[in-house]
Image (cartoon, rainbow, N blue to C red; front, side, top):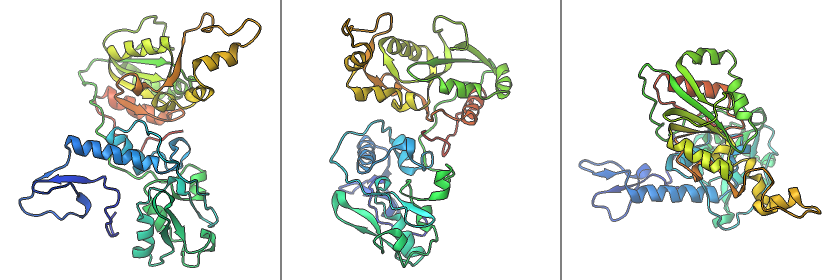
Length: 372
């Protein structure tokens, strides 16, 4: 970050330099004449994925209820390196949120200990109100008072808030209104656009295990649907009376998680016949509300709750598709080309994406995506 000293603590930017025994952090390694640097080798990609997973596992990061979602550099790093799940690690302490300061709050569960806030407070504001206490998993950002509200050194300048890459330090009034700034961040290359050949875009939409809210968001485009209509053929959708999924679909928006065997089969058919598959909404991206059923204990436990009675529990609900034992987000079943989180995704975001696709452009979504 401009103006701050470098500490090379996260190790995300390691690169291989010819002649060096081990990878080195790019942020603190000066360039020199004749240097040969490799930035994207398989070992480096594996390393960055592991680092991103450890950063997530080291805190309590729930993107759907974080005010920084959509402008979080950790979230963007996970997307960049392809992180789609975090394995359970050691139990992380749950430090309480410190909202004792009038304007600002500190949530240690969202902190990745990059120390940007500490360096901004010390090196830019010259206040030294923040520091790091503890060791290992018990490390955390602290203030010069028992609580932040008791700090004598803090000047309420907000430099720590601007420096924080996650939602660990935030301005309370803005967070409550969902108005935290969406800072642009490096992001994964966008998917290849649909070729702009002059023909109409063959669009499909599919509704799996979800509430239909994402399709309602699509309808909330209102008059803008008429702007898109001359460039789109809706070839399959809950809005269209089409029984079988067609071939040669350019783009398919898939709402909902995969909860039944029938949905798994339909998703496989969609993937086989679609050029660009879009996970539409939080349930499609990470399971979200649909996956809450997993907490009951699997398909058998769900049926027991729904059907227990004098007649016993059937192996499957009569006349209904067989449940999968666990609800799956789309990427655990098929390759996903583009994810649009949100519960539901905003109509403005859907219009931007569809407008770019019908024009043959790759959507640039940096800073626009958020969960919840």
